[in-house]
Image (cartoon, rainbow, N blue to C red):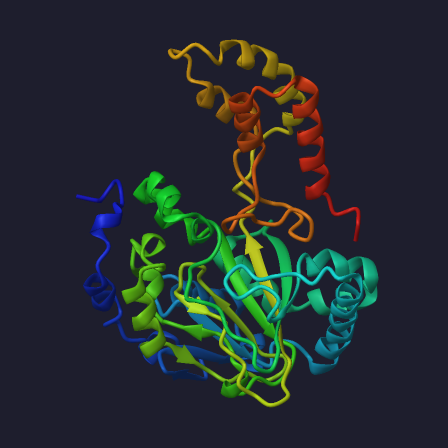
Length: 381
């Protein structure tokens, strides 16, 4: 019988090790140039000349039933990458001058450089560069393969400087950004669904020998169903450190991987390579509501009623808050709306709950919600 709930006490390293016995069979991927340490490596020119549905079929198998990642050698032209790199470096320099250097979700804050929402910033700063960069046919091919049409692209530039430490092992957005306690509240089918709602990618903006710290992966680990409850466990981290795969990349190479794959950016042990990658997070169009709703206006209007009923123990305020206010932290502007005490910023629902708990006057709630909305906008770019 299919498991309905995943419980933290059910997490066992032995079960992950059983999953990791899988082997990547080259015969299943005839369009791949080679299999290197369980990873499928494709030559960009070869797959550009192949029938697109056949390529997409291999990508789907690779990201789902296969190792969970593909490397596309030469996916982006070096001149296009160089033009974007110059713009990203200017953004980072601007951040340094302004004293607003951004942190990383899974690494020591301040050790490296991060540009949040590099997608919009590049479009506004250098539209011609943006058009050349995102006209990439292979980006579209793999995104449509995993997510179908109407996908949405975001990007964050990550630079691991010489001597910079890498990230700790993790899984990615959505459930990878939740605490273990929160993740366990979601039924098992949502754990299975999370990995097909997004696609992770990274474009190499410089040559990345192993000593510069290209991303570490654990092929096939995305198939461990309890992984969203497991990746913080010390024994899983130890196994990852001892058994990960790390492949060198060249400028213009791209890696795409299942967000449930255990992975981490590597430490940069080079003497002078400022390892830059453009991290692409591509989302399914299906994680959206049907209607547009002004939830700030709703929350402020409902607040006096909720406040009056707050002393009624038989009345479940949280149920009403869930229907009225935004209970999810994303999407947001991570330059201004930064996580506090976790991987996600505060939500509208959390603000409304705090106002009720502390008996705020309505004007204070309105101001807090308005400030929250301003932090999420990108009009400061």
